[in-house]
Image (cartoon, rainbow, N blue to C red; front, side):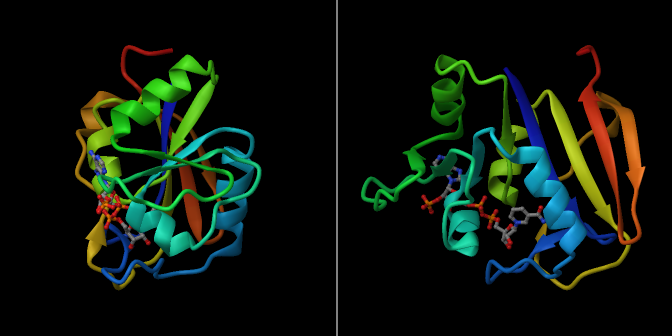
Length: 161
Ligand SMILES: NC(=O)c1ccc[n+]([C@@H]2O[C@H](COP(=O)([O-])OP(=O)(O)OC[C@H]3O[C@@H](n4cnc5c(N)ncnc54)[C@H](OP(=O)(O)O)[C@@H]3O)[C@@H](O)[C@H]2O)c1
């Protein structure tokens, strides 16, 4: 099973605001996110789920929270750690799973991920939440798609195919 991080990052590293908002709305980037993740589980932190407000359709939404009383919502699975979420997906033989944020979950997922699909936005954004630092030497670029407002870069961890 491939563990894939997917994120959109402004030129100044921003991925979101402290209030939980996405600081930009770029339709083509949402479309890229949707077409890439459709049909596969998506794993997110509780704060990111609250930003979305409702589960994203056509994908198993797995929400990570330490809370024991998080309300169960249709089409979602609640897990108390990132590792238990990954374990659940492994047992269910998914070919790939996507880690969709936010910062706390990305931070924990970077050492575990096999691939990263990063949209580098061509502008700076206002916001307090940054994509975590990662060691570029650990990753090999396999592809890049250049669009008007962002470039999508595909990375595979060195040593993986
Ligand atoms: N640009 C992008 O691609 C992108 C993507 C996603 C999100 N975002 C942005 O990122 C921001 C949210 O990121 P964030 O770092 O503040 O929050 P987050 O990672 O979405 O969620 C954090 C929460 O996840 C739970 N959690 C984290 N680690 C856990 C663990 N090991 N075990 C159990 N639960 C764990 C905790 O929930 P409890 O407090 O309930 O225990 C924690 O408060 C927002 O601004 C959002 O818009 C941007």
